[in-house]
Length: 340
Image (cartoon, rainbow, N blue to C red):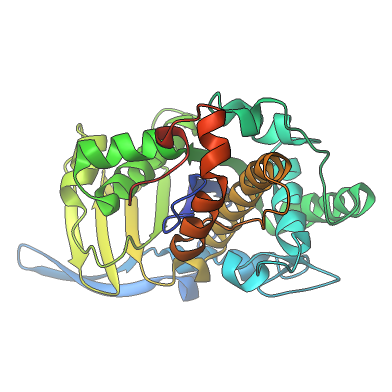
């Protein structure tokens, strides 16, 4: 039994709106093809043997799901790629929405509106209190249904199944508290991300006794950070974690017996792997929906106000424009503004 888990975030840089970290977890059938293994020498005592070392590339989901999935914009296939490729401000949510809602359907979660998808995560602030909208927004329910059928069929044929899509939304008050607690924005992101890894790993079905289970986890790198061992040890305290690499391109760790090994990599351009790309899209879709609710509220409060994506320069313009109304409504900065 093999699991592939991808983690990514959206909204790390802005001053307004949530930071969102998402994870996708896939089960794939084991295939013991010699060509899909890496070979290496292993010496035990005086005996030198050539052994096969399994790698995550053996389970390339882009290849397995080529019948339905495209790694770029598509009108006929399901685009699953880095969210920055699929969404630009003002371009609409269609490409993001198709991938995320179809994937949610594939994992057994049907979200027909904002409240079902996001509402349970939101704090008690006025821009989320009465907001709701039907989903999908920029595509049709019929298209989502048709693509969901094709996606489920293609996954079954390819020996792959999307087990879960999980999302962690961190709104301004909590975001600021995390930075105060951990000291830096980067440390806060790392803790949220690895905490989500632990939640997803704990959610996986328990394998039968003695049955092997391999986990390959990929996280997009957290800025320039190269060392994650202490963080992993904090969230997986019962494991002896081996450091396999710590460098600019990739930091690689592993634990567990050979027959049930867990490997986690923090790598640049992690979205090249489908589970990470889907996590990137999911995080971005949730953040964009949250910003729609935020902008809808404030544009009703301040006539003529131009919406914002929340990034630093424009966020300052937006905050100055709403300042008087914010004071009248007695809305605290701690619920609105991310300090870093």
